[in-house]
Image 1 (cartoon, helix red, strand yellow):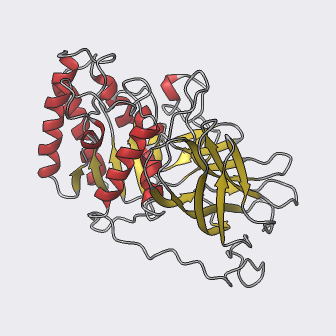
Image 2 (cartoon, one colour):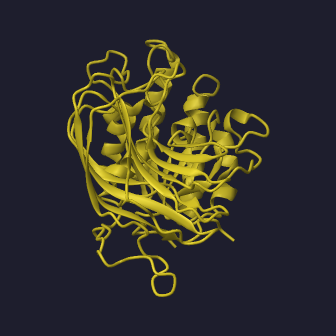
Length: 389
């Protein structure tokens, strides 16, 4: 059966490192990354769009980043990106990912094939991937091949010509298949003044992947685009009396603070949100979300919502974690006003009885002028287990 009204809360993403890097997992943490275009689409849609993930240290065969045996992405859920993969390797993973619950999927494939496969082979594999998903009843959003800087694809080289041809094939494929659409992330990524269709200055960290500025631009465009495809969700309303009660309201808000204003003058400041949170019980999954309004400011290097389990083996989850270069330098946030919702990935509370902690972490360049952020509708509550039985 075809899907005509995909759920905004169950958006899957499939592809290469351009997809995987929306989330960063380690043994002790899981982060939606500020370099991630899907991360920003979630934020700028005010939490209406969601690509849910959860911490998972397993290593499924064929899902190892950059084909490194034994290496985990440290997360599962609806981010099906695996770095370093060619289109045929992505195609082989379809049976496993189709066991997951989602209606709409955004597909990236072929960028790692450009130097080793013909344009026809790449286009055919992309079409087979899309067809398999459509035949499974999914709504498919095709992504064209993302343009690269000339340090990765030489000016006037074969890769750039192949990409243009493949992208025209994708336009025609989407136009001829029901429930298939094309979102051109190059429209927000490529500098129209560039002779060789390179990304805007500062949008990429290496000519291939996203920096924070590039992720923000593409994420904003995607959030706007998906408004025409997914139904609008109800406005998030936070009733003051919707409080956690282990008997009558076990899914209620664990926080006692509804609104704070933060004024940051130091290079880095961690704002504790709520004097004390309620502990709902060991093994309970919890997530946090808040609305945020950030003015234009040239010195912002990070604004993150962080949920921390302070138990001895506790982990933490972070919404919009800052992105660092290899030398530790932080990539800047956009110098523009933005507002939205920060939502952490769900966190499973480990053995212990100390209440979890919630922070808003703000990082500014040293010597920057003060920054005032409006934070409201702080909501931390138990959620259903994201792990499929």
